[in-house]
Length: 155
Image (tube, rainbow, N blue to C red):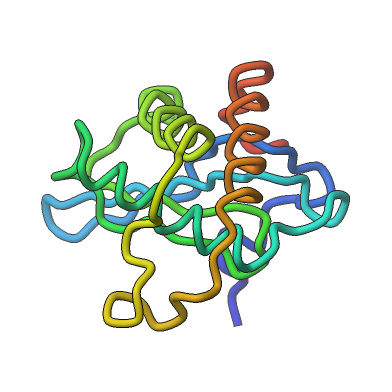
């Protein structure tokens, strides 16, 4: 069986950043998948489930209400819990999409109040939330993006 593209990235050298993972085409439609790598795989602890779940709720809400709301296809966590995926229509570069990602994660880092979608009738696991840790990881990720950029996978 052929190895999928994301398993061909050298995770031993991968650092927090914002990477273009892939582009998928169907006719004239293009969907770009961005790898929002928040922690260094296999070197830093993974993001705990409740914090990652809160990041998902807040970032998805912010992105789907913001300037690129009509371009957002999906925002959600990676199974390995080292970051999230953002899928958008079109072919923006990681640098172009970074302003929206930074905005969403700054929003999370400063968020106070009720977590959107965190009610039994709105979410399948509404009790598993951790705003304090989501804010910590969001601030850490914004700091990494602003200090280091990292928009290309290591070779």
